[in-house]
Length: 253
Ligand code: DGL
Picture 1 (tube, helix red, strand yellow):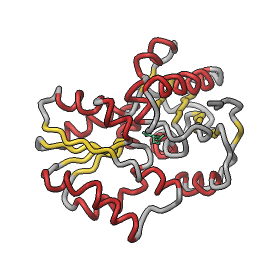
Picture 2: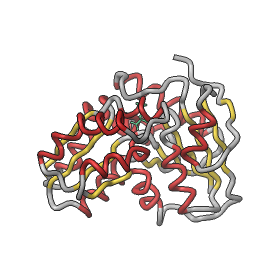
Picture 3: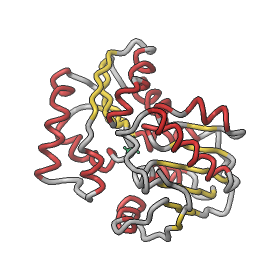
Picture 4: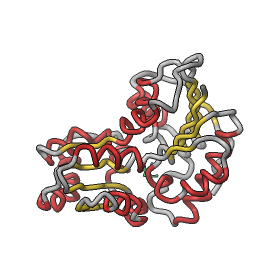
């Protein structure tokens, strides 16, 4: 079994790692569109166009299943990708919502990029389960993580700035609706206190159980559209080991 995973950058490696932890034998191919990150500030049309290019790149690598690890892409491009590809396509929104529905007592918070929150995809799906939903875009979280800043004073102040209103609203469950946010989980948990945190990377890995047979050679190929200076460091931070990165040969604006 060969699974393709794409994200706008390195954040989707949190999803890749969760899949690897659950399925040690499958073959994984990852594409990070580091040349065009962030997707979260772009128009829906651009997000869809980039997502199609990423999906086509991975489809050519002979994958049996595609995981759209980017919340922004999952918010806008799922219908197009499902129609275009002849293999199963799984996004991050549905698994995250299902997990939240299981955990919540009724008040759910969801945080993500501006584009993800503006799309209303999470909100509509959560509301269809009769839940009260509080959504908040947290645009500074991605650059913080990209800078390797995941704890300390600056992080705590930004977390407080964005999450105060969700805390005051009394949400009991919080969905981290962006691939980068699991890296801020410690700071988010410290500030929010006693709330259930839904990490979409873990939710995706559990959604794959039943769909995926853990068979293959256990290989991991990592492709990036731009191999910038910090890349190797970020890969190591998220995957927990040094890994080889390969050029993808796509990614022009
Ligand atoms: N990968 C994106 C997401 O999960 C975050 C980074 C970006 O804005 O591209 O929404």
